[in-house]
Image (cartoon, rainbow, N blue to C red; front, side, top):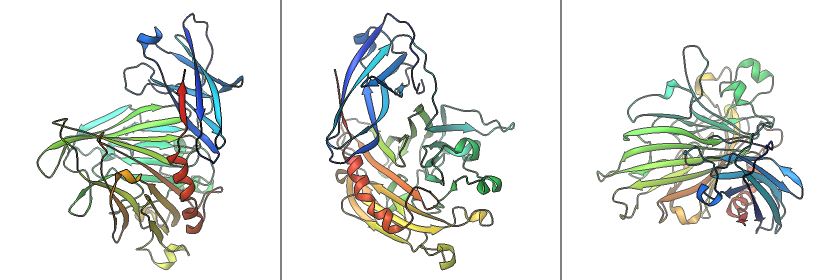
Amino acid sequence: MLGMPFFCLMASAQTKTLQVTVSNSWSEEKADEPVVVKLPGKKKLGFDVKAAKVTCEDREVVCQLDDMDGDLRADEVFFLTDIKGKETKTFEVTLLAQGQQSSPIKRIYTALQIRDKQDKHPDALRVEAAGRSFLFNDIYMHGVTIESELTGYRIYFDHRQNIDLYGKKFRRIELPETQFYTSEEQLREGYGVDVLWAGNAIGCGSFKDWKEGGPENWTNVAVRGQRVVTTGALRTVVEVYDLGVEATDGSTYDMHQYYSLYAGHRDLKVDVHFDQTPEKKPFEKLFCTGVQKVGTTADEKTRRGHQAEGILQRDGIAASWGCDYPDMGKKQLWAPEPVGLAVYVPKEHIADRKEDDLNYLYVVKPDKNKSIHYYVSFCADKEEKGYHSAKEWFASMDGWKGSVSHPVSVRVK
């Protein structure tokens, strides 16, 4: 079940109203703050939830109803709220056994599409293949693609699994038109474009194996796949997974990466989970993420006055700023793009910090639940309402870290 945004009431005898209290413990105001309300199961409710309505002080709040585990039953109600520092807000969430959801203007775009001879690019919910099968060119846009009004991302369907970036001038949804392959005419009309060439670097927050003191791609896997978990007007969650990953000691494990993007946000939330047999054995393997040093290999003309700069801090913030061509094969079409990249890794996952010629890296370790959580963000200098220098970009890092480190608390009655 994909997300079902907004609400149109239908008569139903089976309803349940939940009182939801949302509290911001942080001192700063938060805009478009994500709120997740986990639903009681069918056994407790007595019915499957088909529709939901959220109100706050008699005003309706746009929401979406999501099935997170793929059993075709709703598990969560999701909505966004603006909330002041130290503020508490109360919402009513009405659940119905019957209903019909209308579709307001979508603030999120999600696509996992197949390349076909008719150029219709049919949508898929899941693509899975043997690890050594090369489907990169058979997936339109080369992987699952997601977009908010501020930023766009795609994750490559191949051994790299790199995160690629789409930057834009205006805050709007553009990928249904450009599909990451912006034409000359669209460029003249002010549309955005792919803004990063990663090459052999880690890009912006890509998740890699850690072997022999450096990042490694996901080459030795039995099965690789991508899946749209849920999507609606307000958020999308997509999964990138590798099954039967070969470790250096001969053992194997499964890896599931979940990428969450919210309307009104430029950043991605990344959750990585591991399964290993036997279950009781500690999972102590190391991995890595980070940001590349943009523009370090570019000449002064290409850099356009944007010197390559970066930080790699003990508190989990790595960021860089620079300028280079976003596609080395399209220099005549696409100009060099100044961009800022960033990751935030909570301290409990940091095993080490490393810097090489191309990257600022964190070596990361799973927690006791065999999971790793971190955040990815970027800005494009082309944005009308954004950041336009390394100084501005780096100065925003503390606020970003503070915001993601203080999610709102949600209590349900």
